Length: 237
Image 1 (cartoon, helix red, strand yellow):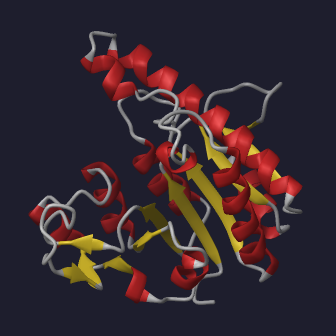
Image 2: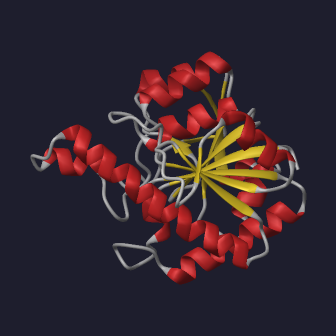
């Protein structure tokens, strides 16, 4: 495979399946089985999961809740998803650790960079939960930060579409899909790949981002192998 150590970023909505809320056990089982196959090849796996299937901080703030409180609730939602994913991965035979940016030792390990790198080197999958531990930052930014801290080769951003388009392909069926695009072009065109803070962090540190359709079985492995027919890679200018 092209990448040895990857950071997979998935939205919380990716876990809810057709339920519209919460965690779909079948989706979780299928995803963990696919990740177990990738892990068996020797690829080192880090994961960051959103919490939007349970609670989204921005939505809470827009409804009148204090933004900081709402974001902390969103961070806790990511911990719930991380624990569910840990359980599913371990049932699939993948030793896994959950590390949280908010200290909760009865539930998971505190995030310590050197310990996370040690876990990855030993072949454990590591799930980074609770975002950055600070309000006003998204899980996209947390994924970018953790990827750089642990020396990942790429951030894999799983979405509903097969890459980055010049326009929303759901509204514009003839929109052009990019196989490669620069960080600057993403920011200039205001393409909704990841939030601007995450893109800027990746640009400043040369961290490639592979955006792909995660709904097809085997697509994660194909993207790790460098198959850009199912996605787009964001590269340095």
